[in-house]
Image 1 (cartoon, rainbow, N blue to C red):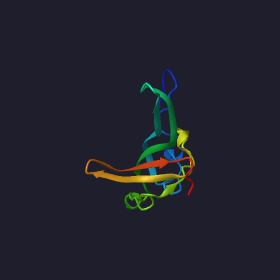
Image 2: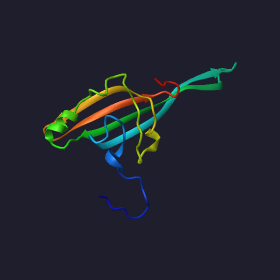
Image 3: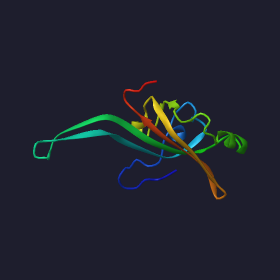
Image 4: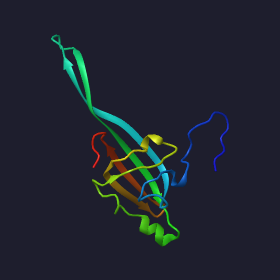
Length: 137
């Protein structure tokens, strides 16, 4: 357990597994997350060629979750080292993430899953997700 001195910071992940999602809860150690807000834009030039107006549209969020699968024993940890529940196009709902509450949203779409494994560390899974406010199923 970390001990903080000085100013308070958002350090590590709190709560069970750091995040809650139906196929992750109880099966992972969350290692890192990131969140990007993005969208499309259109710049409209005026008669002199300078931008006179700008339209921002098609907003979306992209997130990456990186975690180490775990289990009650090594066999269970191996079983949990899978992308079976996270095929491209699968929609997932993140129901809790105390350290990064912006991720707590429904209708995240898996755009990429990646498993990394080596002889010098634990297996790690990375999920890349996208979320459009108007896409709900």
